[in-house]
Amino acid sequence: MVDEVIENRISNKQFNRWKTLIPFLYDWFNHHNLTPWPSYSCRWGPLVEPHTHKTTQRLYLSERTDGTANNTLLVMNAEVIKPRVAAAEHISKFNEEMLSPFVKKIKIIPHPGEVNRIRECPQHPHIVVTHTDAPELYVWNVITQPSDPKDKETMADLILVGHKETASFALGMSHKSPCAASGGEDKMVLVWSLEDHMSTLSATAPQTASRRSATSILPRHKFVGHKNTIEDVKFNPASEFELCSVGDDKALLFWDSRAGSDPVMKVLKAHSGDLHCVDWSPFEENQILTGSADRFLKLFDRRKASEGALHVFASHQAPITTVEWSPHTKGVFGSASEDTRVNIWDCSKLGARQTSEDKKSGPPELMFQHAGHRAQVVDFHWNPLDPWTCLSVSDDSSESSGSGGGTLQLWRVNDLIYRPEKEVLAELEQHREALLGRKVGAQGGAGASKPAATLVLPKPVKLSSPTKVAKTTKEGSVKEEAAASHSVETKGPAKEPTKENVEQVLLKTEKVPALEEPTATNIKPSESQEKVKGDTETKSKYETNGADVDMADNIYYTGVEGVEGVSEGRNKEESEKNETGEVAKSNSIAKELDTKKTSETETPPVQVAAAPVVAIPFFPEEEMADD
Image 1 (cartoon, rainbow, N blue to C red):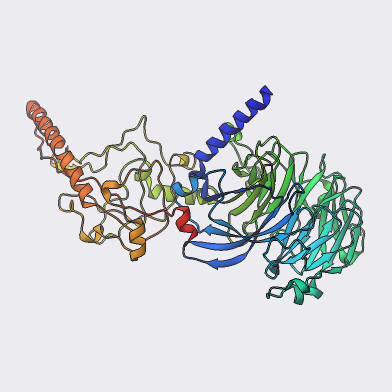
Image 2 (tube, rainbow, N blue to C red; image 1 turned 135 degrees about the horizontal axis):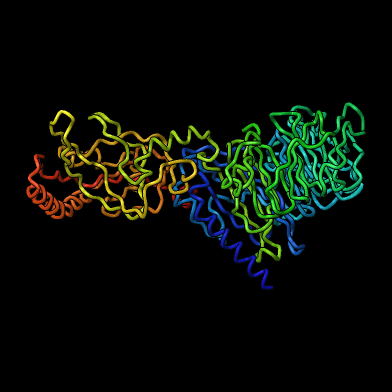
């Protein structure tokens, strides 16, 4: 009991720390509580509708009940915020117990039995196939399915038959033709072709209850070779004939429908534990990934798979549940585990040198770790339409999690993490002054463009007017230079902006043009600065008076250009506040210089108002959801 309490405290501490790092780790993040039932599968669907700052995209989930209610297939719409739009305040604050306004149910389809796996047809993403706790598989056209949850009749468009025993999890779809593959406890891999039924499945008109009658179809191919339950199966993305499968017999088997029903290659001891998942690379057709109950992931080359794995990926602390290659970036893949983590790996970093400090964070190929779930992650999926955007779901109904239902999370990795290091450092260098707590940009000419975004400095910030400093040149002449940078209260020397200390700030911005250097002739803001650019609706929602603008805890960027707000009242107030103190300070300096009788020329200090704060709006959840 004591050990359990300590473990929970450690878990809570890690989770709370992760929450504080959300603005630095993610470009966008959304949390959705699944109550009262968990989901065992999650999938991205087709694009529904594009918008200016977001897209609406279909999601497929399941509800796995305890038998007191119907198991269901859920069709949902998700509002996916576009890159570099969401602000830090938007993504870092969420309530774990609440439903997200960005995720909405569209249809609730009663399902015969538990929904263990969902896979969409790549050629027709509105058609999905489901695995359940029975020998049969079900094919659904989610467009034509009735949305009335009171209809408890089985409404599948097709039923795939052929398994002799329960087939619960192994399910794959071909990218080359509308074919589905499945494996089960009968140790067989079956393949069905949906080609002959696509005219019926592709219908878009809702079907009436009187027409509801599912057609059963038999498999086109049967493969036999496993010695135990088959847990996962995948097609070669480049071929409709080749596929591979893994199972509880620890074996990885390769099949080719043109070569008969026997495996064309076997890796009998691929892992030391049961194999749970497998995936075939969409970029390298000879590379296959496997995940096991032994907590390891292995990379195989099909041409020499019998010789053993090319590499073993070690970081997870519990059995692997899902592995999937990125559909957009070569060599990148994600893995989910019962240890509550989703890891993102980069094969291009294999063998990279590490310092002793770097090794504490994991192997060099471990690029990113998503730690937003409190219970085992049962499924994970890359968004096929939006690079670096992912979907993950956890089963929170277990006793160890201490809650019910599940957790659905939609997230996009911060581009500062995966972009080339030189490119990231170049962008940080452009904003060196802001990162070090000084001015934004350098001196610009009269025609210098205005910034497209705001960098809001962290608290506390103490602004002081520039003073003139006399400096003697080598020729003996006196040269006056304005120390225009602001002084910032810090507890130690400012750190150089590098990739290692980027967690100190949140930098989400395009290139920021240079600001004009404050001088005595441009203290008063121009009329154009006092106006909010953009349409009337945006101005009414987001315009902020300068007197009401507070310094944010983090630098953030909304990615929305054309909205600027400058308060003349704020500048006037700062100027008046500084006037008395700065004049007194100037007199004190003059007296000291006079006492030393130096030859330097003293010039009264120029009183310059604090640099104006440009107000950039962020989108609260309720407003973004209605965009």
